[in-house]
View 1 (cartoon, rainbow, N blue to C red):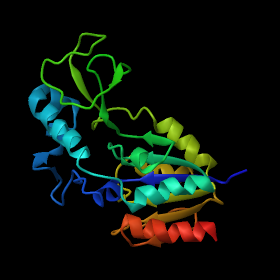
View 2 (spheres, rainbow, N blue to C red; view 1 turned 60 degrees about the vertical axis):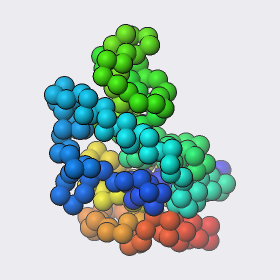
View 3 (cartoon, rainbow, N blue to C red; view 1 turned 30 degrees about the vertical axis):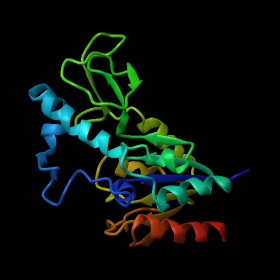
View 4 (cartoon, helix red, strand yellow; view 1 turned 90 degrees about the vertical axis):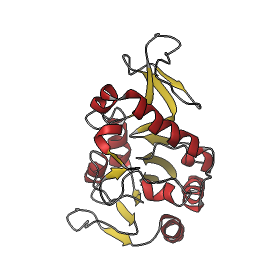
Length: 229
């Protein structure tokens, strides 16, 4: 039976493909206050601004490709039972070959009804003000988990982490909750690898953690070699 491997991925993985990381050092997302473009209040206040913000992000996906980090993660399925838990809203893990991807913060290539959060549909184009869900007849919105909203996939993510023999945390500052708290659910004997150019202090974790201060693709290459040994 294959050992269970969980990959917790963040913006640093997609950054190597040219996907802009939303938040800069000043806490702005593409020049916007984060609460203006990533909160229910921001959407109620200025839906056109929010829809345009995500329309631009969605269009960008068609100009980028999976990088070596995505491909290495997918290749590990040959030897491990791999589940990817990502904070990213792009589809680069899927396009890179991963077959089990759980999106914590939603997906750019899906849209949902503003009234019924379960009315989710595939969506590749822009969303315009006044554009209705085909079934509910209510305004469409991006299928993105905004600040202040519940993370519907968090319980499944916890279950994957609890069962993992190995955990790779890659391309994330481990500052955004609830995602950052997932490693707290790791078994005491689970081996954790943490790859990030600017890794956070993980000395408080119970598990043995190997920290690799590298970009995602480089670090994933190193970790793959360690795992296959």
